[in-house]
Image (tube, rainbow over all chains, first blue to last red; front, side):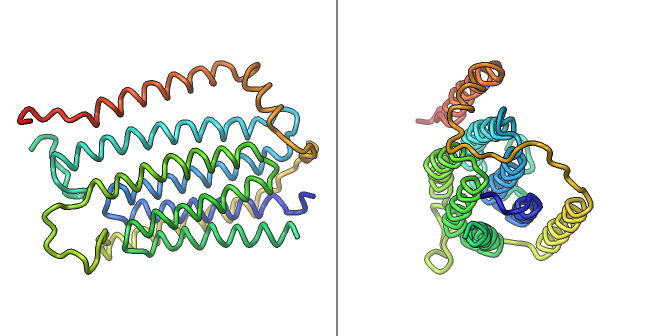
Length: 103
Length: 173
């Protein structure tokens, strides 16, 4: 078991992180940016879990990944509530058009 | 066998991530994100993290993705005259596309250089037990008790904050 070298996990995680970053930059939609951020958080979790394979007594990496998942869930709920408020106020989801604090 | 599973799930995750990047339809992107999360959960299983894989599926696929799809549907333009041809369309500026491509590929080259350059010397034993649930439970209740309680308070605060923010405070109604 566990014949896959650590570097391959790290490469998959790096690829997912960079694709998530590109999604966050290119999409002109708040929820599109949120999709990219979720993908980046997942890529970070792959790193933590891949290193945690070599720590079977304490599993610090897996516990850290668990807390990352909790924080990601909290972040998404608050971000979606803010996006819905912004959409109700400005009637747009384009981050470039939301440039005033008050309309 | 394990290597074949690892590479096929990695390709699944990366291909669906690339689909989100190039898709102009946000709903398709959200469903591709579902596939990417499943691929990542399979990678967790292959790395010996069975509890984390189940948590990933329950929290991300069952909670976060449903919320995101609700968000996409609730932020549709009601008076959209150019409907039905391209629903859920996301505009992408060419300059933004170039910036995203440069940032993404540049960071990937940088990270790849670091990964290849660093010789990670692993000295612990590789996970051999069948399940990690017991270890995670014992650790959460002993040495990680304070982060556990803080996470609980964070979730409560996020719940209250999201409910307050999403509340309709329009005085006209």
